[in-house]
Length: 628
Image (cartoon, rainbow, N blue to C red; front, side, top):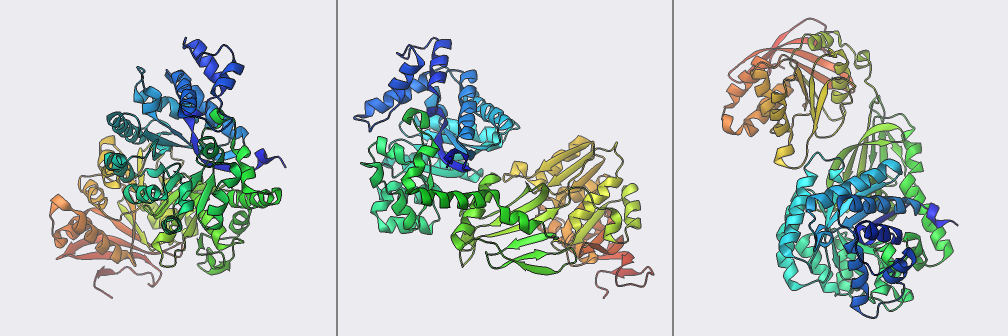
């Protein structure tokens, strides 16, 4: 069996300590750096550790000689690219590379920005050339300058918020080197700041310290993964704590042997931890310095037959042939509650049972691999994520619910199929009037329950918009698929600066011909309604409601709750809403159920004319919200 062909994931690999001997030699010569080696073979001999180190100086010499050659953007970018290339050649499909700006910059005139950009640009080049996904983890080495470490974290977070291509791949933070009592106090605020910004936390702990260090690391920093962590094998209590907190260990067997954290590979506790139910992952740590790759680590798992079983299992969990078969069935949504209790929602609204050929342990691992594949920070601290993705050539909205949010500890998964191209308008029933509203730039609110077809109708209506118009489209999840030639899109984030409310305010400065809001849930209703009130035309948005009239009441209620400085009472809000909003379209089971024309309001009660109603004979009626 060629184990390099086995698709793999690696979560613990140091980019700045994984440099090819040829590259070290080339960079040293190019930049006139004396590394006490006159050939590539000599570099390999001097800097590769193949036996357990006799003293710390041996390994430190290898690391700091490697660090010496990282002196500029070009060199660091080359190393980042080659890391990606090496991983691809090892059969790795997803890798998280970690690097320490403070370590790289030490004793050099090298700015953190230059280091960060070089790493991002290098992995970007690698992902363009090779079929591999890469994430980046920022390290603060505890043994280096505290102030510089904290500054480097601020710089990483600044880049995450920037428009630099693939800056969002900076999604993890780590502490490395000797664990000291002071480090828990010194680094807690910086780690907390990173977590608040949506960054995942993985910390080096329990490599050569104690099980109690691991427990404290998880408690203080909220780590969802631990680098190494093998010392917990000595403490049943801490093993239970780690399992209860759903924390995974990034285990590096050869590295642990070379640094004498275990006496022999045969005595390594990885298999024991796995058998005890602890989540473990297999990693190479510093492959070039240690003369290994990820395939080299596989024998620690035991026999060839066990590896074959792992291969079959992993292939199924990473390529998802069972999911491809399920998604071939006609359906708009797929609800994965458990292996034996899952459902498919058909176009007609019927639900059919489906089964998934996984056991409970494989189920959880499958969902975690999905979150990694789509670069989602999904864990105890962030238990719900919803995002756009492509599966087997089709577009979907994916939602993951972490097991920690359920009394039964069951993780769940929901898929909503998105049309690759807009549906024809007649697929929604009677839409002739609505088409005219769009052409004449009326302000329209599309209402309905979850899965009623609100977004699908909005997407189809965009085909009626004049191609010369400038559209601004705002969403929290990418669902409105439009080929309109002049569009500006905003996808909301987790910070106040990237909220839909903020983006709506920004968009008013862009001279839009139309503004489209994916869904009104909270604060964004305020600038949306104020945009109508200041003369903007052709605004369209969606909202959850149980009827067309209820949509008015819900929108007014949201404005009253989130209006803040406006301080308008409900009656005034309803008056403002009914003066500027012109039509409400109510959807049910993917069809237009009702269309109302807003006439005005009195004392908080809206008045409207029914244009289309599935429950009416066709005559127009003037009603108030309270008419039944």
